[in-house]
Length: 341
Image 1 (cartoon, helix red, strand yellow):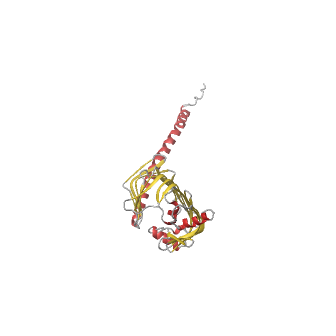
Image 2: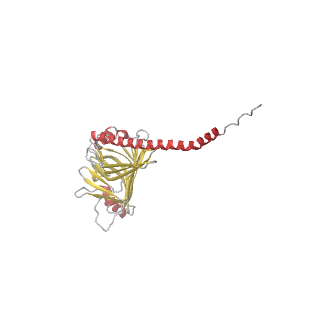
Image 3: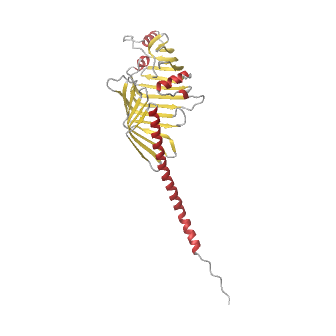
């Protein structure tokens, strides 16, 4: 008697099919768990680095402090909210921010976008506080391994209000403002770009006479040499160290427009003396149409009036020289030289 072989069992293949069915869900669960762990680990690292940085700055006479700190943004972003932030350096310069919000992508915690919805308070040593508010005030910081890092500050509908008994600030208001700082250039170069539109100013000296009480637009674009030397225990020490290393400022573009008046620096190289005042020479062109029905009060108006009387365009082309703490337009002393610290 013969026996037929038993039919193969179908149970094992069915189990294999079911395991393959659940495999993607198991893998997704493992990845989600790993992502969750990674996000909370990154948050812990951010807290530790902030605390370590604050302690290091305090040991060197600086201050980085806040009254409250919260993290959010899980799972794809790292958001931080700080209250009563204070950043100060030993010579008295300080920045106070009632509320600061920041965010970064979890895959790039070297690029942060910061917003100050309540504005900021700038403290100037010996000059007092200035409260800066506006419809928008934000900043971004990236490339933190470079020196200086890439910093961009932008604002809209800004007002600059000095505290009672404080000295005036050079800006009164601005419809739009932007400031960009870049490092990492060739030959140890850095760059600074500043632009303000619809600005009311309180400049002293020559710039103040150009702007007067008109709404002005301003552009300043410069390159700095030996930028890696621009560091020290405080701002004044950093600038002195940079100057001693041969640091210079090359003006690539500088212009102020205020009504019919215009001031433009076409070229020049500047430095900083031991007292913190600008030194050097700029080739400038100044256009100021004098009101011949009014008394002449400034050297620029006198030169413009003379040009108009001869039927010429009232444009003054001359060297603007900063020397021994004074500013000279040609041979004319127009006031004190700007200070850096």
